[in-house]
Image (cartoon, rainbow, N blue to C red; front, side, top):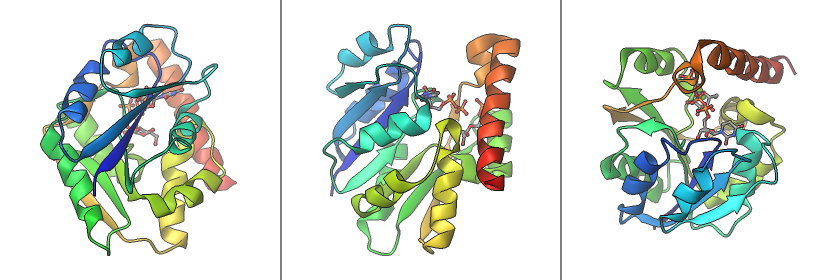
Length: 208
Ligand SMILES: O=c1ccn([C@@H]2O[C@H](COP(=O)(O)OP(=O)(O)O)[C@@H](O)[C@H]2O)c(=O)[nH]1
Ligand SMILES: O=C(O)[C@@H](COP(=O)(O)O)O[C@H]1O[C@H](CO)[C@@H](O)[C@H](O)[C@H]1O
């Protein structure tokens, strides 16, 4: 069974190529949906250079809404969510996230960075449930769409779904992979500003 890969992207013109190259060269991938979340840079132009379906959000709505929009497109039996700012993504990582879902007993795969960069390795060791790299079966789309989530709390919402529905997950180590941090993208002040927003979204979800 092949997969549909959904890539939410907000101002990723400098990074999305490094993700779309390996995705488009993976035989287990049937289609790629890039959701351009109101980017003000050339993210859409770069994405159009690849064999992908491009979904344009009218304005920046946040990662959760971008993924929901992607899930509303016509997808295949397995869905894989990948961030647009990954460093070191390879076809083998993509296969490792897809293949366990071809068995009946695994509902969701969760990718964990390992031996990439110490800072992102550490972040994912401390909080593996925040990982944006996830595969799941199409049967879960309805459940995920119904989750009450906003911007950055999609991963914690999915973690609660896993717990409530007793879903079977499998952690997949993504060797030599990392991502570009908010501070690297936006500078110290801009990065910290978005980091605080992200943690607020996550905490709001937990106390809600
Ligand atoms: O408003 C937003 C913010 C982020 N993203 C995308 O969601 C993914 C993860 O976001 P980010 O890199 O900001 O999160 P981090 O991995 O740094 O926590 C990336 O592909 C972003 O381009 C998005 O689509 N809309
Ligand atoms: O790993 C983390 O601590 C955060 C923050 O990453 P950076 O501060 O940008 O390195 O990133 C993850 O969490 C977000 C919220 O759950 C997800 O949306 C991202 O996909 C994920 O990389």
